[in-house]
Image 1 (spheres, rainbow, N blue to C red):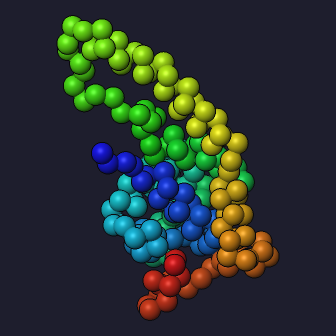
Image 2: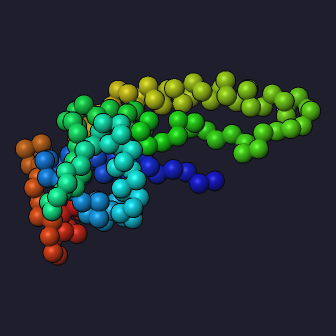
Image 3: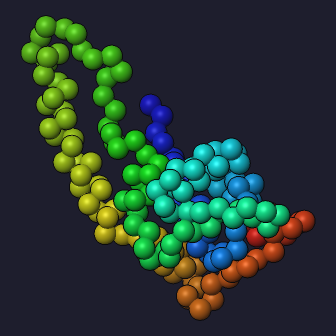
Length: 163
């Protein structure tokens, strides 16, 4: 069964925007980094903007950027902006049998799995984009003062700018 990558890809996109500070990133440049299609990136940006997490700057040097500081972007807000909150998918066609299992499986599983989804959201509510960035920097051996912003985005350097 397919699973969604919207949350993880959105976090990748937001981390890129945070790293680039006030420099807008084009969807094409973001797509290179997340190894996806620019149309997919734009669709996610629409959801993130609707949730107040990103904003767009129009014009020749336009693109997407964070709408608020990374410390104010909770992971649960990203999750809820881009994912279906029904973490577990139930039958596409509801069971129609008359047996005990057929009649009671869905409400039984809902009562068990709803607290699991709520626990996930509670955990994500306590984490911010800064937590993600801190972990990335620690793994890369980079301190906060070494954060690179305003990288070039033209010519050959564009692909490297978001890598």
